[in-house]
Length: 214
Image (cartoon, rainbow, N blue to C red; front, side, top):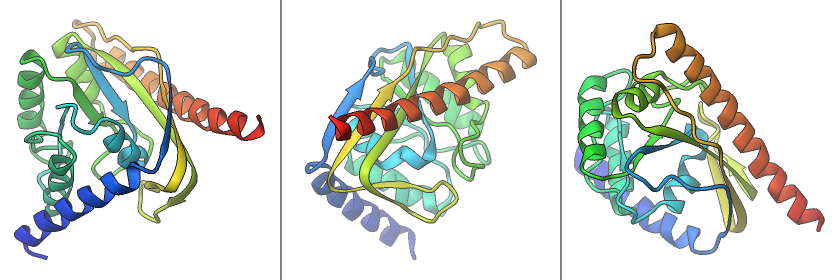
């Protein structure tokens, strides 16, 4: 598929996601990231409902420079994420990091898909820890669950809530990273983030189960 077709396909998917998401019943627990000094963090598997939840909020989200990234950038732009910085852990990461820091200093909220773009699933890369450290920002873990929903058979088991699904979001307690953190401290913070994301995902799922039983 040519670059232009990938962009057009991304715009179509954004429109379809807006239509689909309009039928979802959204539920939230916790405090969503909304300030300059906060970073929203989620795993790649929850990208679609999270992207819909924060549509048209002007949030900055980095996208890889790959051909798949062209498609993802078009989807995000169609959902109201302006001019996504391009770069990832595998290519152009330093450029994306500088762009995100600039956007943060300009007052934008930042969103990070922590285990992208190639996985392994549910294992965060250290980039978000570096961004939090350099920008003196806190990380807000975002867990998501949906029922009924499909899991697309990709590496990340992408979550696709079906029409009229109940979609629950859980925003965990903010995680802070000291600016003078050494490599060992950064790794501990990365592991703590993955534990927090797992807990937030479980709590979002439990929320749906409780409401179903009520």
